[in-house]
Amino acid sequence: MSKLHVISKRDGYRRAGIVFGRVASVIDTDALRKAQVDAIRADPHLKVVAVEPDKSEKKGKA
Image 1: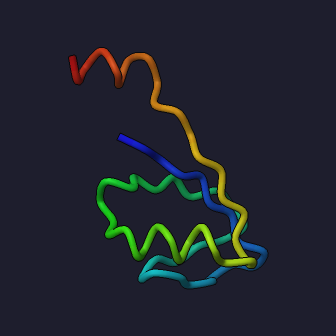
Image 2: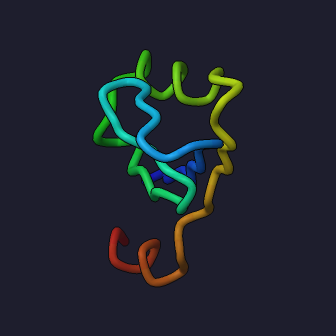
């Protein structure tokens, strides 16, 4: 499971069917299509940081 922390330069900004704001949104990339993830990552109005899964999440999948 991969996640992204996404912050917009302004509140109410939309990309890939998701509303973003100045507060970080945590997005589970498994719930999105590749085209949506690509659009979010490529958007210059969004700051996107990939987040590694927690150790507890890794243990839960084993």
